[in-house]
Length: 262
View 1: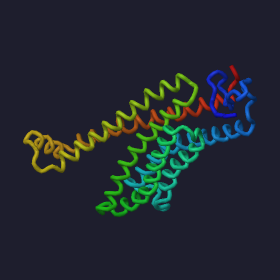
View 2: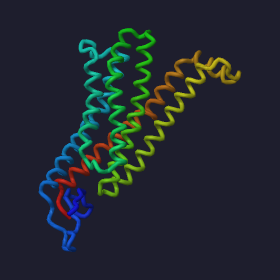
View 3: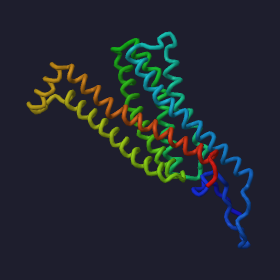
View 4: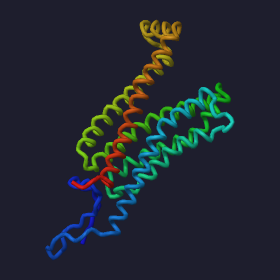
């Protein structure tokens, strides 16, 4: 008798469903062991979503503060390692849920790999703050910034896959809509970064572009304002929407477990 685990849309409670018996009888009663295993995986999933919810803003604040402001200097690289490690811990908690769903597992594994890369890069934030002119340290910090954006992109893919497996139709629609918007904003930021690097590093540019770059260099306050606006639109906005989706997904799962049956 084959068995599968699911969260039923009808009752909004996690149950273990059994297929019909080979003799053509009625479905058997839920397997207590499988039901308990599903509850354990859901509890780890909720714990992972909570860790990601708190880890995203903590990582941004701690990493930026460590690199630019020299915060937590007495603790050296430990705060950055702890903040980025919290994100990796959250994803690790989620990997016990629906292991048979390959798109979900693949998206989760990609996000875990990028989270591990961020943990590896995080000590260089402290090193670069101590020796800001060092080429290797600056390269590692820039690579971590790129890896962080890719991680946020991958995390939105994880949330999209998770929302597709949950019974709440409203959550499924919102997750699909807002994760697509978040990924579009992150791709736009990467495109702007590539354009900026091309404009500043290419020697033979048209005169119009050369004049524009020279004007920006003379009026660097406009450039700084542009960077601030770009960060607010293309980083903070996707980050806040991702946090909102994490929180709502966690609430839907808790409601499915502890909420009243329909």
